[in-house]
Image (cartoon, rainbow, N blue to C red; front, side, top):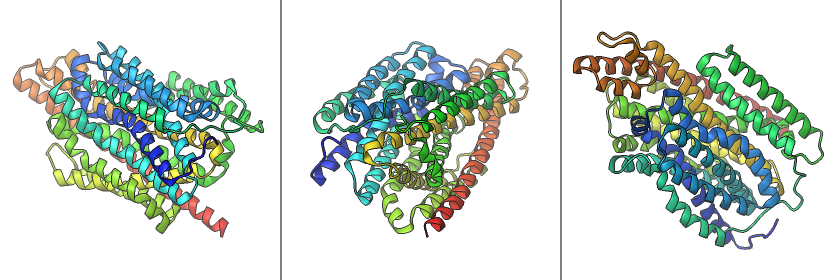
Length: 504
């Protein structure tokens, strides 16, 4: 590796710059949750279009992570991180002034390219800078807490900007942050790369990208239209073929681009799955609860973001406390306990209705955020400790793929389920025509817009029916999340116990 950091203070300075770099990316993910209703009113995207605006970013990031991890090992992680920041900043300026949903989706896709460069490079730099595992656990906790803190800051920033300016400001705010972090990174970050990187494999990069994107798109469309539908079925078959070919190609090489043999370690596989499922639940639920607070309870964007704050602050606390919990409790107990706490925290939320119940919402949010973040940091520790620093790009690519694919699928799959249940539950409303009812069936936000053009009594009846339908969808999404997170907690307990017994 080149160069080594001789002083402890140098390592923590590097961590601070890396955290500043990922902060701008993470803020952008959650800032849209509060801005979505205002964005919908201005650009008027369909329900599918709104999901794509939010979802295109992680769906672009995920298939590029394998390539970006390998590029960082080969050409330098600092160089890749700074290039990603520049692309991200330029695309943010384009998104801020997007005149249509299509342009905004394209800008978000370009931002995804920048994010794909930034995320694995940031974790690889942390892995390289901290060789001591206890120190690294603390560093990973801070790195993860920064992501949680950015998620906490995003809705607050978004709520303030939407109320005082316009929805485009949530993207424009990225530009000055990038302009500050770029020169700091150029001056303070050391360059690191693999001394002997694996040979570049263009076909493997294409296979991985096609496979991951097809998997994400197939699950997204299958959740919306049914998995027997020809399009999602064909897409999922393409994903299986591409990923199977990629795996066989990597196993046949002595120096693979991505070491898939890491998945032969059950603990590594379970940790990766836990990261993916945790992000699946967290990102999707954040979006839906932001809509619930604004469109069902009628809160202003800033007030809604404040109500989401317990979830984010608890995540921040979980990231900071995860390292001492890991040292005291061990990996198995920390991961399993975190996921179990998260699962239990979702159960009381099934009692939510059309009335504002502050404690019923806030207390589960605290347990949800803390449990998920503790489990994530413990899983991250398993993943990045599985490889030497010289191959940090491999572990970082796998970890960040799980992050982004989990978050993207959470919005796509859970959002498709919520939309399907909502559309089915929204029945006929007296005084509302078929065309208007069809438009209202797109989403709750669209129903509110349609109601504004109707007579007062009819509009109120439509909004009430749409809110009831939305709550039906939200309850189904919560049940799905409870099942998935509970199953992952059980699987982690069984597999990590078997691993501990085998070591004994």
